[in-house]
Figure 1 (tube, rainbow, N blue to C red):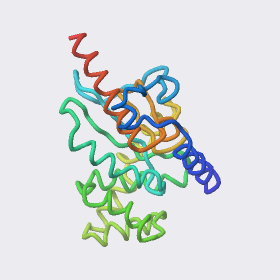
Figure 2 (figure 1 turned 90 degrees about the vertical axis):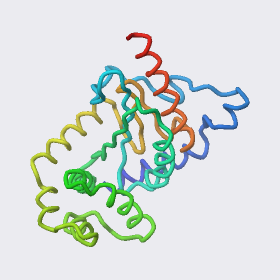
Figure 3 (figure 1 turned 60 degrees about the horizontal axis):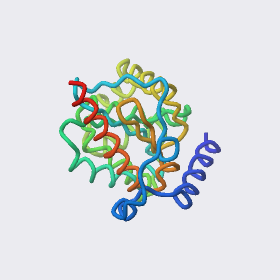
Figure 4 (figure 1 turned 180 degrees about the vertical axis):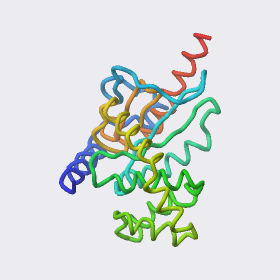
Length: 223
């Protein structure tokens, strides 16, 4: 697990340094436009989304242990403040190997108990700023308890059947979209981009915005 993680992070580190970014300055100058096959990929076959009719779903795949996902989080938060009401945002805690499953269980348990807003960013900060080693089940449950969450309730949610189902669903989606690293963003089940393609965090956010708007325009034309 550690080797696969290090390889993924190394690839993304190089990519953020050398890829051609779709950034604000270039867009203003009119010299850069997102190109399919370069800045994003089309998913074949497209994946089923959970967004209501007429709305577009944007999905972020992440892992709490990923430093790039941690650094990408403020960009996502900024985008959320200004996104269209017709765009539905979802997160999928990626389970690319067995070592990542604990964090996925943590996310879904917090979601089930209605405390995700309290714990999501806090776990990122604890791992990447405070350098706490929070990967094992007991440590993650301790962490939730430290925020006043009932320990037994969180432990039950952590191991619940509903969380099992969500993890299986997430794995199926990851396989269907051919996701091999994080952070990655899927738009409306049709398009996928990552740091290695967008070249920067800002580039990823721009692609989220651009592709979602194109899908909304297409939906409007078809209705």
